[in-house]
Image (cartoon, rainbow, N blue to C red):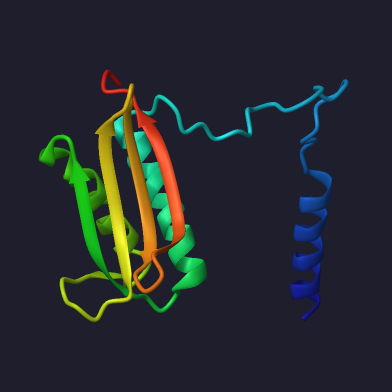
Length: 146
């Protein structure tokens, strides 16, 4: 038993006396070290998809942790671009049991619009059908060259 206490005391001593100095000497930098702002302009498709997925998943986790059913409504200038909101759905479904359905008795729409204003813009909204109330909405601009 004495050997056990000696071993524990030795390990604690080693940890205490061999700790590193995690704060370097000198003055701390002024202001932010990194930019805390999340930009929603001029994103690549991958960055835009990650942003939309994070935003939609966060909304669903807070409002519908048990999941929900909704009717998707995806439109774009080019129908091949509708794969991006499908990726958002697929990635969100890894965390939340949400389900896209096509039936009359659903309470919500998930709307995605991808269009060229002056710039390529992607908007997504989660809307309550009975009063057409948007419950969640995000918009990003896409740089197709990225």
